[in-house]
Length: 194
View 1 (cartoon, rainbow, N blue to C red):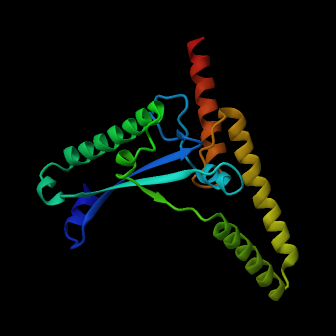
View 2: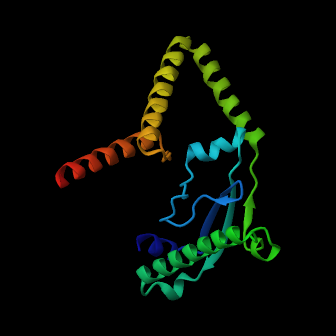
């Protein structure tokens, strides 16, 4: 409601965006209850650089918020319902083998990925860090910080992956923290039931 009030004052259009993540012909962000559902995170999206790419399709819809500000909750729920139906239809199109038809795909825009550009950004970042460390005579500190951070993120992610077999990493340590919390909660609920 606060966001709607803020954008109501702006002069630009309000756009609703629905995103479909597709890898190997399968919709990753399918139905919430589907066991095949994968919430694409940093790791999932970066796996495509050297492996199976994740294609990202967006659907844009211009919203008319001026007439819908009387009941912002209904407005947001209707928008969510439309997006949910769009994703469900995408899943049906994939199951039927018609997801690549021109009629269906004309509603979506493919976000072009550039693996080479991503790799060059990573290399450029690493080179910049090394140059800064050399200029400040802190190469040893850089190596220590990198080693500690890499170990923490990799260890936390691996522990989380082993506990829940799902990556949930939108910020570092998220997979591990969520998985450990979920494991402890399930264990506590299991203990209470016995």
